[in-house]
Image 1 (cartoon, rainbow, N blue to C red):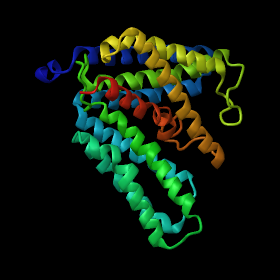
Image 2: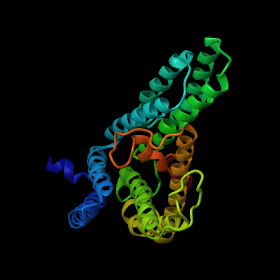
Image 3: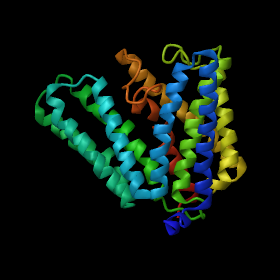
Image 4: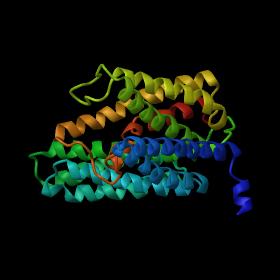
Length: 314
C-alpha cells in the first residue's frame, strides 16, 4: 500500500486534496445557510451529489488509466441511455441502437490500449458506417435521416467526445508532466466544473442580462463572465501542478475551457428545450441526469486533448 501511494505524483495528491478541502468548505457553508435560514434545499442536494461524483472520480484517478477508462465507459453508457430515452426513436432503430451501445466498450478499450489511431476514427468512421448500413437494411426510409443523425449525434456527445477525457491519461507528451496524464484530466475537470459552479453562483448573485434567453433563460452575461474569471484564475494556480503550461498559457486555456464548457451546456439545453424537457434524467439530485452534469465537457474534452497533443505531444 505504501509503495502504491509513493508511486502517485505528489502534485496529483495535492490537487485531489485541494478538491476535497474545497468541497468540505462548501458543504459547511451550505449546511450553515440551510440551518440558519431554513432554505437552500437545492444547494444541499447539489452539494451532497458532488460528494458522490468526486469520490469515485478521485479513486479512479489514483488507480490509473484502466480504472479511468472503466469509469468513463460507465458514464458514457448512462449518458447515452439518458439521451436515447428522451429522443423519439423508431421500432426499426433497435438494432442500430444496440450497435451504438456496443461501441462503448470498444472505444474505451482503444483508450486503455493507447491505440490512438482506432480511438480517433472508430466511431466517426466505422460505427457511423455500421449504423447507416443497419438502418438501410431495415428498409424504412421515412424518418431515416432523423434516426441516423440522432444516433450519431448522441454517440458523439456521450461517447466519442467524452472518451477524450480518458485518453488524456495515456497521451504521450514530450514535456514532463508534474502529475502525469491523470493531472491533465484533473485539470480539465476542475476548470470546467469550477466554471459551472462559478457561473451558477455569479449568475444567482449578480445575473441581470440573459445571453440566450430562448435556450437557457438563467444563463446570464454576469454568470458567464464570472465563470471565465474563475476558470482563468484556476488555470494560473493549477498549471504548474498539473500541466506543462506556464501561468499565462494556463489562464488562456482556462478561458477557452470555460467558453467551451458554456457551449456544451447550452447545446444540450437546446436539445432538451426542443424536446420540451428540463433534465435528461434524475440520477443526480440537484443536477438532473448524468448528461446534465457532463454536458459542459462534451466540446472542452476533445479540443483540450488535441491542443495538448499538437503543442506538447511526443
